[in-house]
Length: 161
Image 1 (cartoon, rainbow, N blue to C red):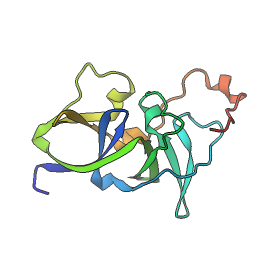
Image 2: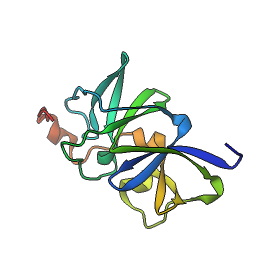
Image 3: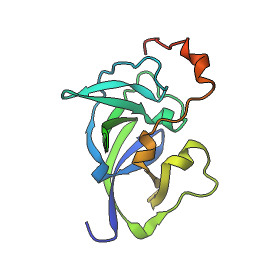
């Protein structure tokens, strides 16, 4: 990789292409059985056992306020390195590792709103699509609970998926 270039592990949510810096991605694994976490944020889909290490699995669709994937579509785990250990991001499909020039990076437009504004660092224009670069640290932070927490405390969602 030449100076002035960055490499991103890419993946898809719906038709959108996202990327994380290759140095932050530990590994990519197929869908794993998950143990649900009662009373957790809806973004937390469960816990997976990664060769003896317990890893929290966050649904990136829910993190970005996208609709849930179809029940018959199994997500893929993008395991990200953090200061507190590994975290899995559930995505629809894995792309390639792409090398892009730093000079092609553009900040997100002011018109971008909502959760995406907080999580997307910027974009690279590729042939026929955009590569949306996620901030891995902000992406793994759970959003604040919606509504009154006390209202939901007595109503745990223990329904199986």
